[in-house]
Length: 436
Image (cartoon, rainbow, N blue to C red; front, side):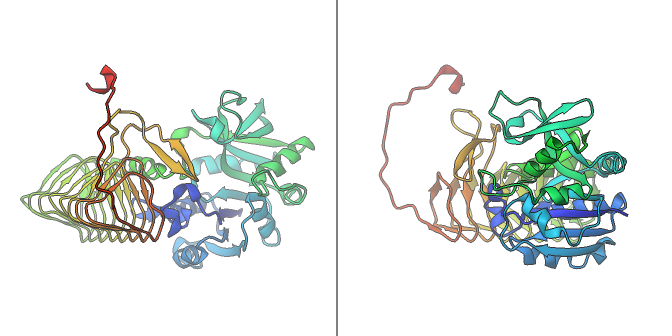
């Protein structure tokens, strides 16, 4: 049997506002958190013992997973009191791990068949890296390869100067060599001990390092807030493939209309006048309606209420959230225990039709998406007639006063009140393409 190590200590700054209250591995994918899928895939390739390195919100991970009995695996926790990078995390597990072992980043997901391909190479190389091809290699560690060997890793190269589009996918099969080399590296410019620096040093010293390529369609990363939408969308389609016409376990009114495949879980209620156009997912004990419109690729969590005359389009709404009436949620991610006042609107399209930018770790990043709404953290409350502009993030526990128009991010635990009533008229210059 092979052990696995899941690195789950990071704060996940690029996943704020959700990582403020949820560690990255507990971000939900349909009805389960990401880490449940990771553990299931590891168990399917014969892993029966998992070491999880935790720090940020560690109690929540430990409470959710407990001893691992419900997953039919043994789970042990190693607390990284002050996370100083991925190599620092490997140092923390040195006394407990039995090589060869799998190293698995807690914010990625790959199907178990590619984990099996890693394991098939365990007696041939000192390290095997799972790799995938991407259109944006400059955001990752890029592999330089010859034949089947990795000869270098270039971390986040300058755009246009990357040696390939093959990137480090965040899963490794390692022998005891890596345990020695994590002690031989220095702090990176980011102030962390990077696992890739240890790997580069191994390669430089002649240790055999290979890779297994996984198609991008079988590799998922929760790296940015909009990834929550993309991963949930993909897993919704996969789940509904099992049920050509969908499956209904809950209670649907005879006056509701369902078109296309829809998964409605146990205890859910779909009231009179509701129109659901699949694919869509309605979680346990959720209540939809009356007179609501649920559009394709909407995912509504358990114990959530979408009330009268609300519209939800291609959004993820987490558990225990209420949008009681007259609300529009488009291409957005709404956290848990959120209460959206009547008339709350999430705008999802810029006037100029340009792609939406989102602020991640202080920098505005182009999402590449023309339609993208808001990201509303857990326990947020909005008053009536609140409008939230595309790409805006609302921090957890914040309140937004009635009538506010939110153009920029709101920090957690804030009260936002619009005080200016001054309006300014300026000349508007538009190209013909922008006014069609």
